[in-house]
Length: 297
Image (cartoon, rainbow, N blue to C red; front, side):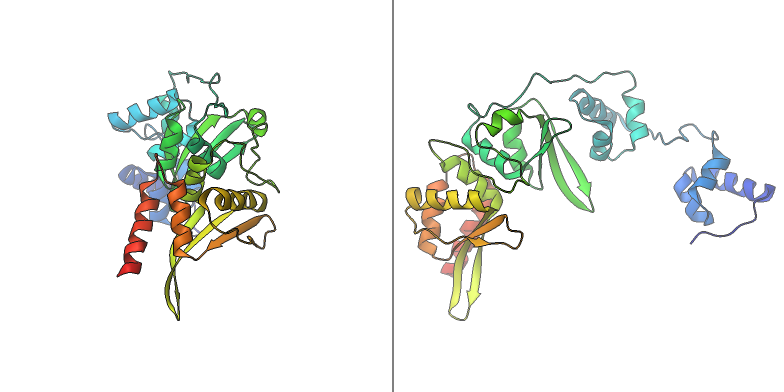
């Protein structure tokens, strides 16, 4: 709680003395129980870097400069390396970013597995005309990065870590291929000759395999989530290609999302055998293997 203090010469001297000892506006404010604004006002210009600059070790400086060359914004770099924007600005003052505006993904020659990731986690930033890929598992972004010259960076939001990849995105070209924004009322899968790779990526991100415990014992369960139109298309493909019985998608309260439920271990095995291939997300398939072993025990 901030103190109500009488501002006089002795108080100002105390603020400056404490600041010189601690060398931090935030800590001085906390130590004296006064506002940061007051500390800043009476310590301005006392120490080099009083405007927020904090020296970083050479390896961090190199990372800052590399990220800037790769086209990241100052605020994104600051979050990635754990610095403030003033520090980042200081280390890139003599540099110019290298734009890669000539790069874009072409859906007609992008592997189906990559399209599955883009359909699953890609968000479209209209103002900047870029695709923003976010996920806590870096694996998925690593797969897309192999087909782009851009880098992945880490960010922490509300103590939750996730990875980010931003790339120029030809939205109109992808719309012609069946893509729609993630918040659209209706989204469908792209027109492909073979859906094995696309669905493997989609299921690795938007499905859940677990064990349902009932009075009759343990039962394997697979749930697949997505837009109601997209889910119906997946339902049809799995029936035709994997040989399982079509299911009735269960609508979610938001009116856009539906869920496919599979609770027959044989059908679940048929589905996952159909979509399995390379590349694949080890974490997803390791979990499935562990669940099968748990059922056997």
